[in-house]
Image (cartoon, rainbow, N blue to C red; front, top):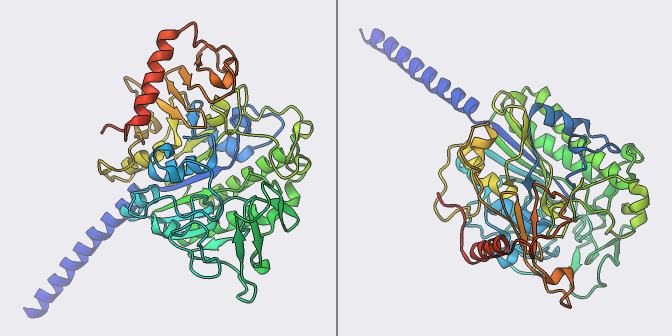
Amino acid sequence: MTSLIKFHARIFWVFVFTIYLADVIRASEALPNVIFILGDDIGYGDFGCYGATKIKTPNVDALAREGLRFTDAHSSAATCTPTRYALMTGQYAFRNPMGSHILPGDAPLSIKPVTLTLPGVFKKAGYATGIVGKWHLGLGDAEGQQNWNGEIKPGPLEVGFDFSFIIPATGDRVPCVFVEGHRVINLDPADPIKVDYKNCLPGHANMVQGIGRIGAMTGGKQALWKDDEIASTLTGEAVKFIRENQKRPFFLYLATHDIHVPRMPAKKFRGASQAGIRGDAVEQFDGCVGEILKTLNDLKLAQNTLVMVGSDNGGILDFGDTVERDGDEKSNNGHAFNGVLRGTKGTPYEGGTRVPFIAKWLGKIKPGTSDELICSIDLLATCATLVGQELPPEAAPDSFNMFPVLRGKKLAKPVRDHLVEDSRRKAIRQGFWKYISPGKGKGAKSENSQAELYNLEKDISEKHNLANSEPGKTKELAALLERVMQESRTRLE
């Protein structure tokens, strides 16, 4: 009798374990892997699927054919740090002085470690979380006090990431080294790194490996990256993260260096495009996307992985160390890197923040095109819904849930009633109307000193300022912008 009881008990626990295992498998299948690939300075017109003819981007174009391509997607700001801050926190960067401007390479961490971040949402849902690439949100507790020769923290690991392999700031800012976890990789203790942003020449006048950088750096020669190998190094680390976490849900934030200056594409991409060195860098970015997609296919993960591709701000042509190396008007060969949009990176016009954005999730996102007004700041609230995490009221104050849009739901009204486009001159979108606040230009006739109003439905290139002919709408949107700037949140739920 005892042996019979033990036998039945074993059968019972096998049954219980089988049920549990089935639940785990179902849960794993229900939680998709998520990869967000963020390009740097890639413009609205830089991909073939957005009209480029002198640059070949077959991998991004394939992603667009199989996914949802957005025509009115935006970065939250016209420059990098504010966009990346908003992406991580779901909060407009202008609400936090530390995240509201382009940071030097020795800035402290701009995100408080207690903040619920985009990777933090995934981590709460049981995901492995990783960042590979450009960080540019500060490291450490105080400006200029990072221990580049020891532990460098707080940083990405303190705000929601399990794995971190980063460029601390930008390719044209020191230190020119990779940081994995809390330490510079390949550092020789006998050759310590020193970084100085106060006692150095201005602009791109400080040479490291023969290339002008912002900020001065000495030491760390063994740890210096090779500029023409940055893309392959980052892609390799991203592939490694996917392979090592293929058995569990993962979130990968791959923030590429391309196509920020210094533009130093690998030899196989040099001369590949018809748009000079800048176009070659775009094609290298596309190659990176291709490697990620190939890895997903090889590991049979493509079916259950949401892949998104975007950019941190609009495109710009020549602002690097040398225009001959980084691209100029002549080498650009007429390529419309921001399409028909007016303005570039750093400006309040659509060319400053309207960017390519594509989302693919086989069987879950219907291929097509969407003209919904969305922003990278919305990823936090959207992904929280995706993984079943309820946001606390104080979290992600400006992030809107775009999950219904991704799933193709028919909505009675747009998810976003308005969107601030952040630059030195603040702008606000509401439907097809766009208002740009007056700047601090000198003289009453200075364009920057005047408010601007555009009807983007009729004037996508922002050629006709309607501020004087539509005073009512101008006043209405000016008041809306002021209210948003003064309030602490725009997300209502």
